[in-house]
Image (cartoon, rainbow, N blue to C red):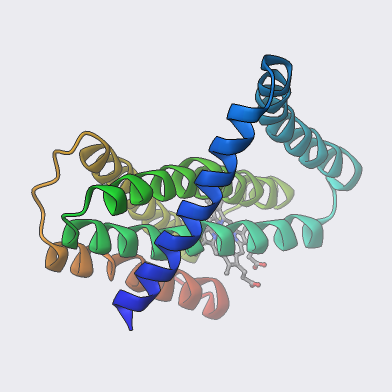
Length: 199
Ligand code: HEM
C-alpha cells in the first residue's frame, strides 16, 4: 500500500517536472522572467489579501478564528505528511526517487507548512489581542504545547536539510516514531482549547 502510494506520488511529480522542464526549454527568457515574477507576485498578493481582511475585520473574533482554523489545518497537513516523506526517503536508494522526494519536501516545507505556521501564529495573536491580552491558564498551557510544535517544525527543517545535502543517517523507523509527535501535540491542544480547564 505504502509502496504503491510512493510510486503514484513519484510518477506524478516526475510528470510535472518533465512538463516544467519542457516548458522552460521551449520558452524564451522573457517567459522565464514572467515565471519568476509570478513566484514573487503570488506571496505578495496573498499577504496583501490577508492584510486587507485584517484591516476590514480586525474587530471580528469569528474572522480571526476561521482563518486560525484554516491555517492550522494546512500547517498540520504538512506536519503529518513531511515526516512520511522522510520515511520513504530513508527507505530509497534510487537516485530519481531521491531527487523527486527532495523537490516534494522542499515545496511542502517552504510553500505550505511555513506560511501556514506563520498565519496560525498571527491569527492566534490577533485573537489574544481582541481579548485585550487577558490570557486564561489553559491558554498558557496551550502556548507551551505550541512552543513544542515550533521546535518540531524546526526539527523538520533540520531533517529536510540533511536529506537535501545527502547527509541523512536516520533510519525509516526513526522517522516513523518522529511522525507520531505532532499527533500527540494536536490531541493535547484540541483538548485544551475545547475543554478550557480552569488552571
Ligand atoms: C501563538 C499561538 C496561538 C495562539 C496565541 C492561539 C490562541 C487561540 C485563541 C485565543 C483561540 C480562541 C479560543 C476560544 O474561542 O475560546 C484559539 C482557538 C483555537 N486554536 Fe489557537 N492559538 C495559537 C496556536 C494554535 C495552534 C498551533 C493550534 C494547533 C493545534 C491551535 C488550535 C486552536 C483550535 C483548534 C482553536 C478553536 C477552539 C474553539 O473553537 O473553541 N492554536 N487559539
